[in-house]
Amino acid sequence: MRKERHHKGWNEIKTNDSWALFKIMGEFVNGFEKMSAIGPCVSIFGSARTKPGDKYYELATSISKSISEAGYGIITGGGPGIMEAGNRGAHLAGGTSVGLNIDLPFEQHNNPYIDNDKSLDFDYFFVRKVMFVKYSQGFVVLPGGFGTLDELFEAITLIQTHKIELFPIILVGTEFWEGLMEWIKKTMLTIGNISAEDLDLIKIVDTEEEVVEIIDAFYKGNILSPNF
Image (cartoon, rainbow, N blue to C red; front, top):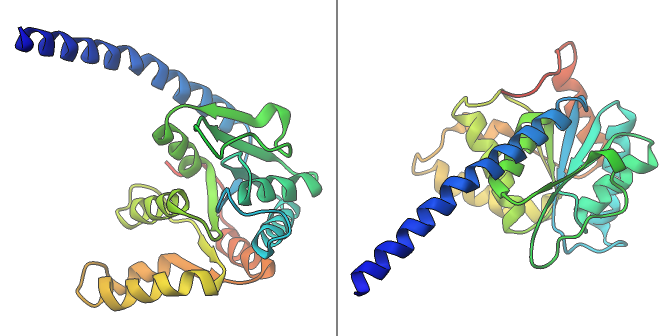
């Protein structure tokens, strides 16, 4: 009897998984259609818990404003904290402000600085991450938590394995990132789990001017297009 109930439950799960494919496809189609019409953008990542007035919130706002003034749109995860600061900077510059929102039980709520026609909602993290990677001309990563590191290392991995084209990955805040980078160099590099060239994929800076200089220098004379 237990065995029969177990198999019945398993079959129901498989059926639900099959129907979920249609929702997943719908998120991809909607995302591709909207994002492909926006043009070149830079993604800003960082903690949802960073408050206005914090030095990294204010720096994210300034960086996003400068990037917008340089002609790029800004993409964020659409929520509070550093994400809000990114959209706020774009809004202050009169630039394109995109929010890729995710439905979470806490922390996430749409910030008020996203353009009305450029706010996208996702249920699936993996679909949302594809949008970030495909339509970003660069990642600017401020101090954050696990989600921020997830986005950072996924981009590095995809570039390292040549699954996507090279684009700038810029870490902002030496004091926050230097411990991680030191561990990567002393541990991962030393035992041969990465190559010295892999470290060149990442730049660490502390000012908005450095961020814009790196992005402009990378794309000077290049044609901007989606990454895969």
